Image 1 (cartoon, helix red, strand yellow):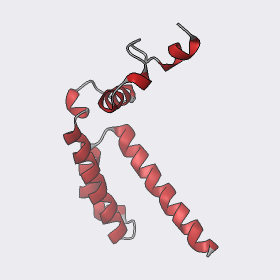
Image 2 (cartoon, one colour; image 1 turned 90 degrees about the horizontal axis):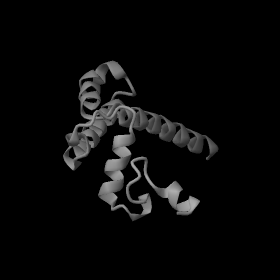
Image 3 (tube, one colour; image 1 turned 90 degrees about the vertical axis):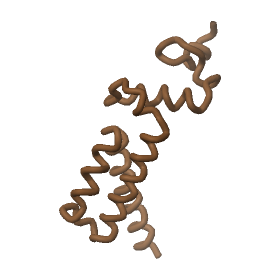
Image 4 (cartoon, one colour; image 1 turned 45 degrees about the horizontal axis):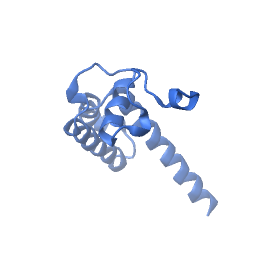
Amino acid sequence: MSNNTNQNKNQNNEKPLGDMTKEERTSYSIKRAPDYTGKEDAVLNVSREKCWKSRDEYFECLDKNNDNESKCKEFYDKFSDSCLKSWKEYFIKKRIADINKQNFLNRSE
C-alpha cells in the first residue's frame, strides 16, 4: 500500500476517507470530536437540527438585545444542552468572527 493510501485511511484502518459516503464521513468526524460520548443520537440529523435551531434562536436573541447575554440566558442554556461542546464553541467563535469581519468591511466603506 502506498503512503498516500495510508494517509487517507481513518484511525480505525477502515476504508479510505475518500471512499466514504457523506453520512459515513459525518459520523467519523463527529466521533473524532473531543467531547463525543459515543451516543448514536449525537450523530443523527435530528440532533443536528435541534442544535442548529437552538443556535439560531440564541443568536437571534443576541441580535435583538444588542449582545446582552443576560437577556438571552434561557436561549443559551437550550443551545448548550442541544449541541456538542465543540460545536457550541465553533458556532460562537464563528459568529464573533463574522461580526468582526462585517464591522471591518463597514469601516472600509
